[in-house]
Image (cartoon, rainbow, N blue to C red):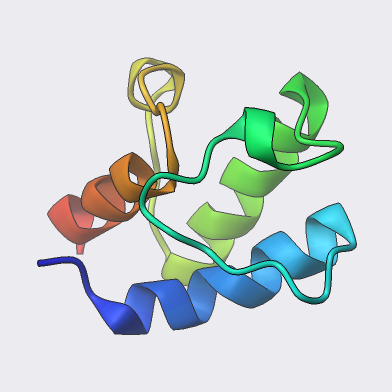
Amino acid sequence: MQSPEIYEKLTPIFRDLFDVPELVLTPQLTAEDVDGWDSLNHIRLILSVQRTFGLKFSALETGQLKNVGALVQLIEAKL
């Protein structure tokens, strides 16, 4: 069960970074689904998430993320 609180904190990060005010996060959402989610913005996204949650991810961990659900699972594992 993925935490709705994590999605609540992630949603404004995604909306601000990708400039899509109506973006709705789902576990299946991937970079291919969001205009502008390229490698540079992926790094910005990960840095914002780490700052927001007070966490640190390894390059291996972030490289293995396939969708938002995987990101949420990683956050849950580190909290």
